[in-house]
Length: 427
Image 1: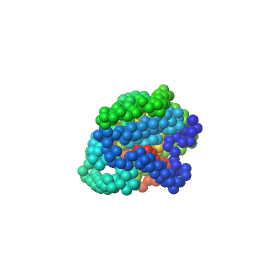
Image 2 (image 1 turned 30 degrees about the vertical axis):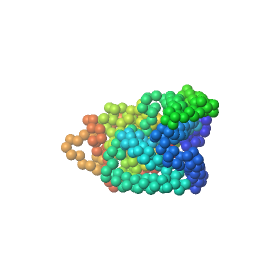
Image 3 (image 1 turned 90 degrees about the vertical axis):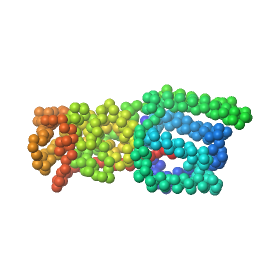
């Protein structure tokens, strides 16, 4: 299992394995199959879809909820067994208030028009007039909103961003407990909605929990969900063990320790979003840190990586730093275990940064008044000991925290190789 995770730690990279044309072909086949399934299930008919809001036909609720719980059990089951890295599965960031308003608008559109965006395309494919009209209105709405979002909705659209936020974080429990509870609740709801259908329609159908095949399927799902809960999800330490053989080689061969001059180039590169992560003690950070660096305690780095850094744009470069390299390396391991790409270590840490730029800044920027400057401490020793003394805790207000070096060429071996991550899932 560990070998399988190392080979395919996330969703299969079909485009990289077979090329983009095969990837497009597979996507098209899956799309056609999904659309065909919706059509034969009656989901291309607006009256059937809208009937759920009148409680006369709850097929949409049952099919969609069944799809959710089956996929959920399979995803977290595969993650528990080490076959899938859940961190690599794209989870839409949660924007609380825009999400609530958008859901309300979509719900009103659903009940009025009889379609959701996906089912409207199924109706369009079969040339249903109401489906064609719905897609036309949908298209106009998308372009109208897109053209006016910056002027009218930008602040609200980007408000209450909770990042990669799931029910497990909301209730502070494990993913396995959430899986088990949702499966049990879903099965009970299946029985409840069919009872409601009977009451509204004044009929008595063969209810969900009264059919033998349904009971067997429900029992299997509950059993699998129970196994997922008992097995639990792999810890950060276990994930690192799975990838340690490959990643430790990168550390030992110094493929991920970048020179201060290379990091400075990326800081000044407008096409790359550089995130500087300082994992030193808060006292050292307050004494001196690079401009725009964010202080993250080593105990918080894994959680921060999972809940925030995973949703950063694809052009984001992460650089971890400490006074030397020891603490930064440990933080780097935790970030890689959480599937963060494009993460590097500042070579020789803050000490290396000061060794590279401090004297140059003093030469290029004439000092005014009694402005304090970092001074080399020849007696300081140790990888994680700050080798400079500071007369005041000015943080990033020292000139060397944001050096402007003109007409000086630095010699270094470029090591940064940006990997563009691709979102998987969503919908």
